[in-house]
Length: 364
Length: 239
Image 1 (cartoon, rainbow over the protein chains, first blue to last red):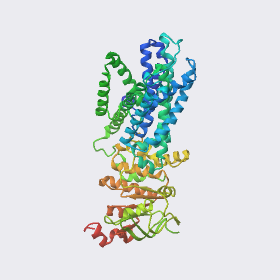
Image 2: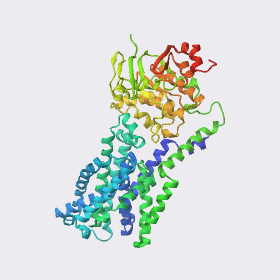
Image 3: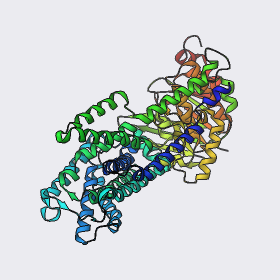
Image 4: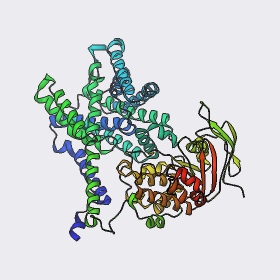
């Protein structure tokens, strides 16, 4: 019996394991540039951490409320262009100081998100998906046609620090992206455990029932949409500073929006860790594919294949599927020794003996 | 002391004619009142009126002697009247624990919510036992028990149950009815509509038989159950 106790997966042990895993990941993320300083690795790390943040931010809206936005690249591009225009118009010297503009880009994105959300959230389901895509393409078109402001198809150049050469160039951006990813995960974690988050999950399950039990559905959806957009916008700002040149078709790239969704789906919608796991698995693989197959865009086939596999085999994503397995395994273990008709077998409430049901019911 | 809930001369319909016709119905505090009757008798309409989902065209509706006619469902909820609907009403992908918490979503006093959660766990052990599992993974009977637990989060005076045994196997139905009896023993007044007349009247202290929007017979649950005419009409020839 002692052997079985040692192997038992209790909620406390699961929490401890999760905490340990998070600590190890955090330490690894912090020291990564020290143990692997070559630009190829740190460059991949910048984009991986960026997508951890993007997928987690998207999950706050798409995962918690069930409103699937395929147009979040609108906020990414808007944050990027806001940052680029501010740094150019303010004639800010490159270096660490421009990072203070990142929250400002986030605030500007918030204003845009309130407007888009106000309109888009009057719709549900497939209509909402289409409206968000439409807004994304509208912004891309504006980026291409407001030539005097954005540079149009010729692009918008941003200054960069000549002091950050060689192996060091990626490192400030890596830590900036990491800080935003940690902030996003923190916000996501807080929401998941808050009463606000509970309301969002209720909206996801059944919006009308949520309204009936007192959830202010309209304001909650808009709030989640804006929080999600602000975080994506800030990440877009750091991206702009990193790539130093913005083109509308790359800043407002539908693939960026789809990647966030795919990563969240793969890891597990509506979970805190799911989008992180999804991004950790997909982004390095995608970059490796893009590197090996050059400009052929063959990696898109890889993306399509992953999407199909996820939908067919893991429709709920990795984290919920693993959680289900653990639950069923735990229940089988609990039921195992007494299963098979024993009078003392643990019974679920539906099969509880009447006397026990009565005895257990006292006034709450 | 007057009844907890009083309907006097209530007439109500859905637009295409009246369903309830000058209905007089009292629910005494601490009782289990069960309404039975054939389909279309207006049983569920009574519950919709009490919960504020349907406004009476004529008549009075009083709770603790105060009129509640015309109040919104949310205002009626605040007065202490909670309805557990006939259909599944849990949030399927949310855990049992989250579902129960949703019962007190409008309560802003965190300490009070925690106290009620603890009390509900004492009363409904399944809430703690299955707290991490999604509601959809529970059986129909278990889900009904969780719906009762969620209703208790508002500490209601009157629990309104619409066909609680609908779709349940006999064994689970017994458990659900035992749970209703225990809620009543814990001080809740129960008003239920039940398709299974024999089980419903067997549980009730007060029975009401409705037909075509009017009360045909009422009295002690056992007396209604034992009435030969009612037995012949609604409970099968053997009754």
